[in-house]
Image 1 (cartoon, rainbow, N blue to C red):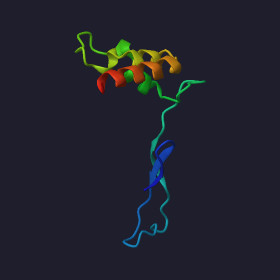
Image 2: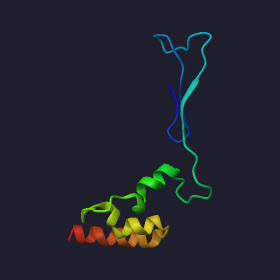
Image 3: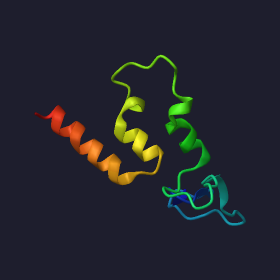
Image 4: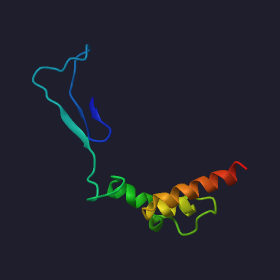
Length: 95
């Protein structure tokens, strides 16, 4: 097996010493999905979908992370507000 977590993964049959068998070549088994153009975080469409508040269940527990103000701010691309909200929530948690 060879590859990079953010590009692709391939494999090739090898002997017990780890040397590729003659006549075999690398076969790609996974390739990173396409990301939306100019995406700030380089998230895939799937990552955007599962992180979106719009796809969250309707009856969320009050403790569900989808409801956190810092998550809302990140989803809207306001990293400054997200950082401030995260710091605020941590200071309340550890007070």
